[in-house]
Image (cartoon, rainbow over all chains, first blue to last red; front, side):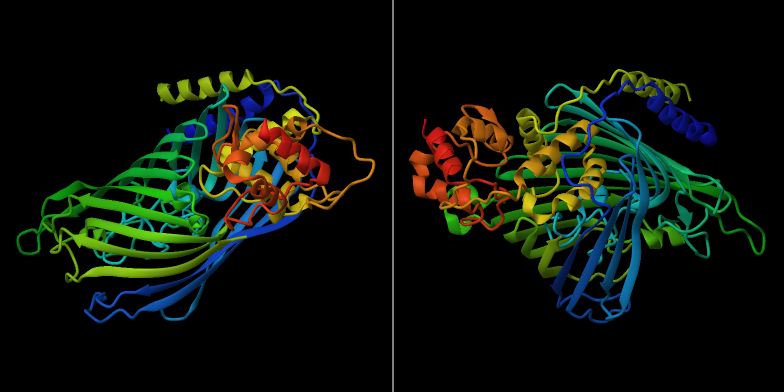
Length: 395
Length: 181
């Protein structure tokens, strides 16, 4: 079934290339280059006097830095290659390196792009487009996303960030302002984490596939330029080593961008099948079970630029507020690694003031506070309030 | 399965209906379109960045990357490149005292079209909203403010995405005259 779907996607892409009546042979108005270096970086100070780790030890205030170069290479008018590396220092002062993506775009025609390799999955907006620190208006990530930026004690929905495979992107122009964007992809898919009872879902791109079963997904969005964009994403793939257990996720994102303000948000939900066995009598086996674990959350973020007030000294100032909420049906009723991995759920609010030094360089001051609802789910309850200062830049 | 086949069929049929008409890269309307696409698409995710942040050669490699990120069509990407090329012309510079000999005189309206100002600013109800509307800007802000802004767009806001346009003394005078109307 999934093999047929992949074949259909590739066949559709080839058909589009052959059938398109594009005839323009214009060339770029620019001097043609081959290589460009872009990217972003940041340095962040986190003040978190009340934070504790899982053993109850104090978590130190820390300063972390990242440098994330993007290598862009133009092989021809049709083929473009890109790769993003992330160099960072962790809280222990060690240097970490990660390949965020490395892929090739093939510009099939005016409105179709085929991407192959490791790429950021078009699932929602934050992971695909908004997470770079000079673009992300806040210092931290929305509470529903873990990973980069740290998530404190709040357990995010399993992030669907990047993977290896193929994506077919299309743009449909509907008049002057209307656009429909579609992406359909097939990728290696999720994996099963190590654990006594099978463990949870791990979505981290690695060489090879653990179960010979690809994951499929896509995003369909409608944009009314320049202000509105609403998108819906879906992702599904088997994650267990035997391919019997599935992980699926959905996302609804919306963006409104005005002259002085913006409102963005996402609703993000996931369902992971997991299996276990009731305790049997003495050494006998109990009844086997398969259960769906649901986790969902949402966030909404608003920004406002003080230049609307017409005072020149306020022109670079921007205010940010973001609220995130996560809930799940993890209730601790079964002793299973999956629940342990689920982490805590609750809500988080972030307030921030940004001072723009350049269009792509910003000094951010932010404070966030987290309220945990399921304190019994895993680790000991601790206050999770932090203050951030970050310098972020794009280049 | 049927629904998947239906979706792909729709994609194939609709894509086949697209047709691209060739347009010359020096066409002022292409530059204006490029400015509009630039302001409408960059700001969907981040601040628009001034053209001078990259060279023409660098932009030619960056734009395909952004085309994929922003879901721009190839035609839109070419228009953006035409806009960037028009603002990165190195043979004139935007200085109040600078006079380019033998340069053909253009009206303020022609220059506003050439530089794609309405990609970001509204004039007489037409144009983008990335920057403030320019109707009455000379009266409200003063001629010296507009003059400074044209020469150094970041003089009052370091985060301004307005590019430094290649203007000479006559160009600046003509544009201010047009904005006074």
